[in-house]
Length: 423
Image 1 (spheres, one colour):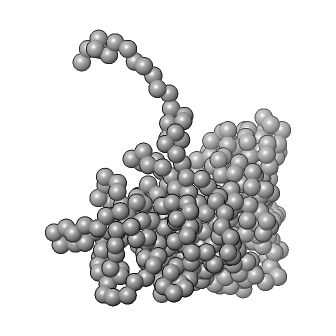
Image 2: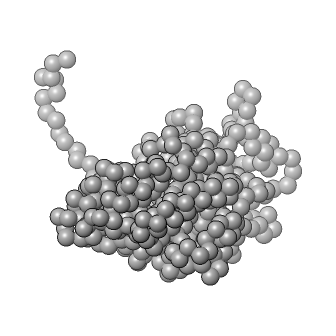
């Protein structure tokens, strides 16, 4: 569910016209509905009932400072995978942070130990050794949760499936007990949790049920070894709908499927949703620059490109597209494409839209996650502005870049005597 609706054929975010926002801030433009974002967070939290739990928002989905502050104000934590995300979470006021990721650098580990964190989600023995070494040097105790690879098929795109034994993520479950024994005997490591993360855009609850059963079995074996953990981290990966009538579990459905197995374990349960909270809270508004007829197709060339939203090019993601202003009459099938010099700069193919005119606005839905966070300056294009809507008010939460931003960190060196270089 989201709060993007039509009034007299015009598309609104809550009570604000997308046309008005495009006129005020330009296009391409990311627009977020605060009410949608908060709603998804709250229904996920309520699904736990009286079971101790915390929601740690996945910063990689969208690390805009204002959106992270929303999470902080709701009492949530943050799951981060880089020092940049860690610093952003702290700057936004988030108090509880999990540091995940398979390739943590020494400086990232040191900064997190100095700044404080809930735990490291550890993915290899080598990483654990490095954390212990740095913690010893700093005189700190590092809280550890092993991210186990439960070898569960999440049934999603191969690029975002992370819980299979063929993937780089997590520690094989068969090695868990031995590693936890080592952690429990270390002076500078403290075992506090056990974790899993199966992938992204998982459209059924079954993989989570299967993965949790494997985690729970290891958790009980650890209890028999007198290794008592305080957290079970079930990860994220809950899906968001990309088409209007797509029937998917909502944020609460994933939790409700697991609640019967959670009871009586005496731990805090942690989840790390990203896409399912912010995905359909965001849209991308883009303007039709040209209409073009090819050999056998009609093209709508828009001002947004794959640098603004790379998911269709990277994952073959099929985002719903609608005109901001609906006109009557017969629809036409268009390939909606961007201006970038790549054939993959295509948002949709043969999409039926009401007849378009040059200058019309189109809206791409479910882009609040992995939209702006994966944007780039490819083709020396400027990153888009971001706007947050609350009721009838709008807030600019990221300014559009200007051309000076493109080379602000570059050095223009005058290399003399180039003709003297021998080929």
